[in-house]
Structures are given as C-alpha cells and as structure tokens.
Amino acid sequence: MKNRILIIALAALTFTAMTSCSSSTESSNLDAVLENIHNRKSVRQFTSEPVSDEHREIMLKAAMAAPTAVNYQPWRFVVVTERAELDAMADVLPYAKMLKQAPLAIVVCGETTWMGGNENPYWDQDCSAATQNILLAAEALGLGAVWTGVYPNAELVNPLSEFLGLPGNVKPFCAIPIGHHDGTTQPKDKWKPENIHYGKW
Image 1 (cartoon, one colour):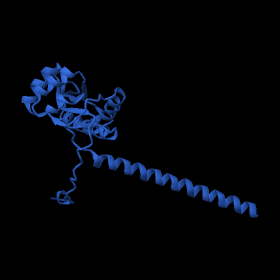
Image 2 (cartoon, rainbow, N blue to C red; image 1 turned 120 degrees about the vertical axis):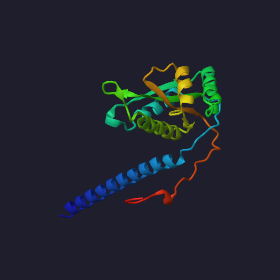
Image 3 (cartoon, one colour; image 1 turned 45 degrees about the vertical axis):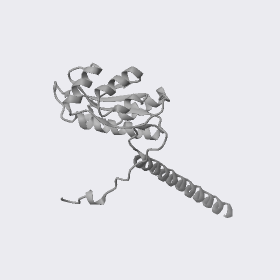
Image 4 (cartoon, rainbow, N blue to C red; image 1 turned 45 degrees about the horizontal axis):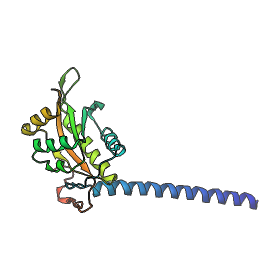
C-alpha cells in the first residue's frame, strides 16, 4: 500500500514539474518575442563588417513567412551586396544615403498582377508584412536595419525599377539597408493609449 502511494506521489510530482517547466518555457518564449518587437529600432549607421550568408537567408525566410492575401505571396526580393551597386543605389534613393555604409540591402518588391493578369490590390500590404518580418529578424540576429520607403512615390519607384532592371509587373516597395551597428541607436517607446478606440471612434 505504501509503495502504491509513493508511486502515485512521484507521478504527481513529475506531472507538476513537467507542467511547470512547460509553462515556464512558454512564458520565456513569449517574453523573448515581445522583447524583440519592442527592441526593434531604425539603424542608420553601420560598420564595415559583412552580413553572413546564413543571416541573410534567415531574414529572407522570415520575410516569406509573412501573411499574404489568398496566400498569393506576391513578394520578390532583390539582394544587393556589391559595394559599387549599394553606392549607386544610394544616389538613386535620396532618403537612403545610409546605403553607402551598409554592406547589404534587401529591396522588397511586389508582383502587382494576379489571377488572370488583373491588378493585385493587396500586393503592397503583403510586402509591408514581409518588410516587418525582415526588420524583426534583423533585430533578433543582432543586426541593424531601416525601412526606407519607395512605393508609391513615382520619383523613387521609376528610377529604382530601372536601376534594378525590374519587369513591368513588378514594383519596388522599399529598400532595407542592413548591417552590424555599434549599439548606440536605442528603441523608442511609441505606446500611446490615446490612439486606441474601442467599439467606435
């Protein structure tokens, strides 16, 4: 009888420990995700250290994990690593001069047609989600990155499209300079409860 009670007690303790461990892991994972979101910042100063191929692929995989209307996945990515090309692209994009420092840029583009050649009204929203995932992945990897807007400004879209040799149904959405940073740029607290409305405005 005593042995039976002991076995039951041990089983209960084991279950409690496993449950506690599982809850602790879930809490830890949640904290890490939220911390990464809140630590993301726009970094505009970079060192000369290159971004590894492994890290580049991690960011691109994160981009392609973004939500997308009817799972169409209109995003296309142009990866630029050559110093001369980065410098030249900075001359095309007046708001992305930090490209002259960055060792890597990912230009997020979108296929603007879908379903029988009709216009895709959601491509820019899908590309926005992909862009955010790149920025969050960069933060998680200890890299710096900044979203520099291109679309819908025709004065930026047209010259960048020509520079990259994009086909007619693909438009550049934004350019993301990426690289290692010195840690001086700090995240901003953007929490403003007054921007929230419940039920109706």
